[in-house]
Length: 616
Image (tube, rainbow, N blue to C red; front, side, top):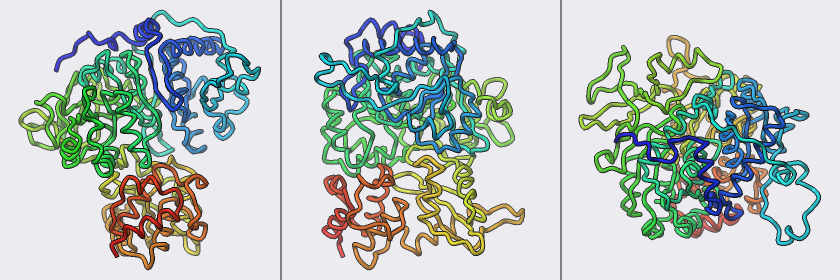
């Protein structure tokens, strides 16, 4: 597949903004508040430009952005792109210690963060801090009685008081468009620098591969602090002048509502991670008609390896083609594509490179021939400019002639399609999120009762891998799994918190004195099987539900009761709910229906549902 400059995204952000202003009534985003037009989006962007002007920021400045609000995050990110600022995207759930470390590394010139993060991250009193508040739908009487308050100075309420600012007529394509931190130890965080040239070059590739047309509509409810959520969602939509649908985050309780929304908004493309596809195939197989419309074109699977059987089964169940994408944060979003063209849509592969080069390199440095395994390396316009303020780390993965070392093991088949065999570097991919085990281990070892810890991934049929840690306790210290997981939750984003922690008398070591990772993983797997971590019946349904809830929500069993509800339990978030359901199914040997899953609002509900399904 060759490059074409016909796509509107190829011209960059200035041209995309001009095209957006020329179609003010077209819908840009559909979210929980309803529709947001391109006209309103562009008006907001011009007002944000006025703020940046008052702050004295010029193209090339870095602005840190962290918010849970889809609309605010999308509009602010687009405004920063249009003004030539480099957006440092940060997950708002980042713990204070790690957030301060990432702020030190990235050195932002300004901050746009949720109000509650301002003090927690040590930003209070800053001259260039925009506090973000919740997005609310306009009231019925707003046009008659405009309130004098502007939302306590928080965005977006304060937009009413702002004057539009000037926009740069041109942007240097070598300016950083954004910086995204890869998972890594808090001692060595790596900020991936993506230039405007790399971003819009790759957007043109994605648009052409996926077949975006003026009538296309992107459904993407992945997290916006990650590239697959933001770049393949609002940014790709804006660059193409398309609507993006984000009605609510993906949750197991709302999967059927998600399919309804996909059908109702006439979406043509669904951007998803394999875990989403596995759950949809498992619990929503009866909703096959959701994808079988005149409008819908294809599903894009990204963020993690797509298991061959899931790929085949999903296509068979829903009657829709799935494109399997291989890429990294360092390559914007992709690089190799299996589909939608028949020649590249090979199950079990990641297809062929598009608008870039790929090769397999042996440990000694030689380029491998067909069917010879080695490291996957990529070269092309979508590759990062480097890691922020880290020349040595950049030199380790990026050669002078532009080849990027992915750290993944793969091979090229005789027909030119590539297959990923595993990872050379230690990395856990849990539900599409990259987790560096060293980061988890570092947080665990900060606990005064932990003598030593090691973290690894164990296979999981739904998540791909689960994060598991083995811990040796300081003599005399009293530690339990729930308490240590609560400690981990305070220092890590939710997707990085271990699913299980196994206590060992001592961690196994090899002759060199280093921890024997494979042996530790085997010991942990055996311990989990012995205590029912992979199944086994409890003495009673009630006891089993409470035990599973304690494990999944990281709460001591004596603090739980049948009245414990998701609404009153902050630890009972969407990811924990998915883990809870999967754990109950494994523990009791049952399969829950979608209406069962959505009906679980309290632990009492879970006991009632499991008791009705329990074959014993």
